[in-house]
Amino acid sequence: MKKIATWYSTATSLVTAILYILAGTGIIYAGDIRETGEAPQFIFFLAGSFYIFVGYLVRQERRWLRITLTIINGLIIVIFFQMWAGRPDVLTSTAGLGTKIAQFLLEMGLVYLILNTRRRMSAD
Image (cartoon, rainbow, N blue to C red; front, side, top):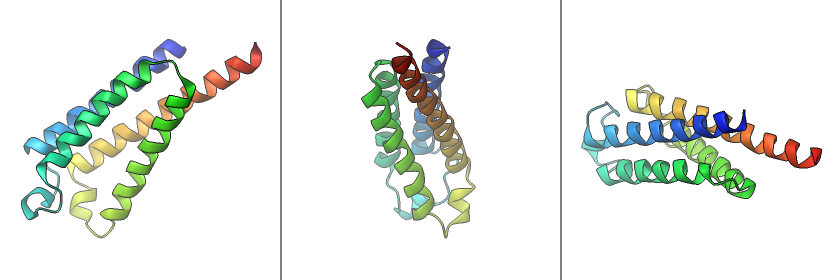
């Protein structure tokens, strides 16, 4: 089950990366934040690159690394909702909802892996 959860977390990380890159290129709608300059295009590519790297790091079987990734991913979700709370066009855009759903699913996978590792270590 741990192997499946690792692949699940890797896949959701890569889906998040793809959604960020698609938003950066303008293929999927992210509100008018790119046009107004509120979020420059490179931010989307930076986020996409980060989540590609997260997909790699999830495969490393280090509990402390997964805990760090869980905290960072959670902070990114919270900051997004705080930044764009007054902008429903951004919150409900394809990119906004898509990336946050994928990030939430990634968060669930990471938490499962952390708890599974802890449980397994205490059973030994």
